[in-house]
Image 1 (cartoon, one colour):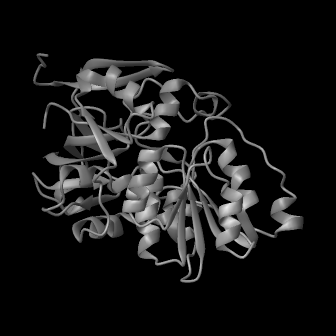
Image 2 (image 1 turned 45 degrees about the horizontal axis):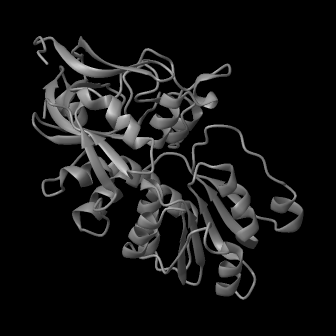
Length: 361
């Protein structure tokens, strides 16, 4: 496809299941801004749910997605152009490999000014609305002045660099579980995030690490990543297995990353009294549970986990040291022009993590 010098190829979200490969204006860098050449952009489960038209992303008074917008928040790239002052502002040079955190904090609200920027009240995230900048499913992307940027050292492969964003989320989630050496930990869901959480939780050396998922290939990979026990809920009795590992009490920590309502109710059943339930998933619709389990019956500590605050440097370090890997997680790669096939594969169980690799690289 021929592209004019001031144009680029991008995926444009115009509505549910209306994502198009288009030629659009190439972004320009203003003061303290930069433009990066995208090396890779992952298709996240939330991207799949947005594409499919899940109600929570499009409906209600404050929809997440505000089309038209270029999607994509799992990315890294090379510094292509620097606006006035940007080199000093970000501490980067032309050609550097960089990643920007998915949230662009307003730097003014009570959460930003108290250091809790990942809960920014304004909450602009790349790829969902055009308030500050489009996302990364394109040849190039503008990084605004208030983005949080990290450099990626040489030696980290393209596939590993491409999972820094979800890995940071996985680290934050596992940290929220406050895993102790004698804990039995259950991770529900062995998708990309669940498999990264498995690797991170393994580094915490719990007494037992259990992963639940209905896909055998993903459970096999979880075992390679350090899981002690894997459970296919269609073949084994998860409650009986967890009871057997815990003298009948239940798991100490339950991390929910299935994105399905059954993952929530299953966790409330499997976890012990006074256990720690960590909810990470983004759901396509509302789910419900008997809240008396949380209070009256078990007095659970229910913790949310959102984004990857302060975890990007940790993710980069773990990848650089080979303690966490994308091997087996990144399963497919497509060009931007192959979007229709890419989203089809990403939305299926035939893949784990699908990357878009723009032709500009």
